[in-house]
Image 1 (cartoon, rainbow, N blue to C red):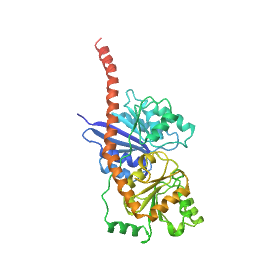
Image 2: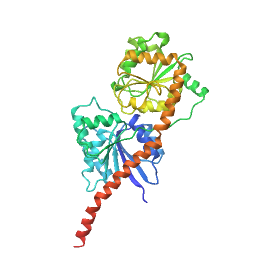
Image 3: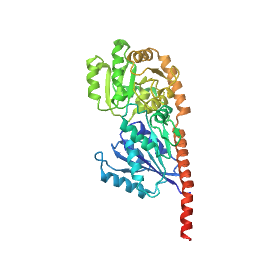
Image 4: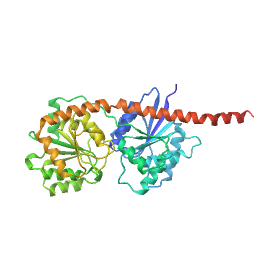
Length: 388
């Protein structure tokens, strides 16, 4: 049997949760059955290098401005020339332009739409476009039950059942105490301090300001050493806020990093104070690394974390509750060890990359089979007309 040709389309390939899931998926598909390719529009990162190193063909189609005719025609040409069996888009911009380009084809392949978050703060225009996309999808994959529920409520007119497939995460080998101490020294964590970690974009959604405010609410002696791994438009403002509230001496801004897993293994716990999450890669990766987690009880976070068992949850934007969670983990090494063991075990059982790939391949195969069945009457009619 010839391998099925799969194209994944995404707007940007900067380092983020959806982008990491794309890499996990495309580099772990069964190559005896699938030939994967990727189209992206902007923001090259080391993730592209990983795909190309794994033998995945990558198309970069730059998009300049909101309406770019050259970009659209190039995308349509790639879709037409690739003779793909199925196309899966991972972001709204990618979904919209891919669907429009597929309309130019006489027999387009099945299209799979995505739900990668809750989108609660999005505009009416966003939801108009999302409804258009979802109503024309052969399948829809959501990475959380919370995201699927929101989409069904706000999008409406969804003609197919939404498949919930949780993110997958590699389970890293444990690092030695010497390696852990060496990394802590490289990022300048004082030897006598408990280290808290945030990994993610410095944007409003992640609510890092609440984390800084929670630090300020703790006595200096009970504050962790806080490491922020990530970049974004709020970095300068957050640094200024940390200084204004008197916590800058205990906060380190590392910028974007390619060694998030190692940082999680070196830290004593991770904090995710987001206003909104689908199914967070940062949480999953930390749990898989055996790093205890504290997270806001929003979106898909409660799907991952059982409070007091695999992590700690606090109400959204409640800096006092977050400060209490931080204080508990700073002062209780036994609790940290318990959460570490149980979080890693949960990630191994429920969120392996093999489970992600198997479930996604099943959706793709179902769509292709359904499209083949629908195409048979058309082919039979065409054959009949040729013989009359």
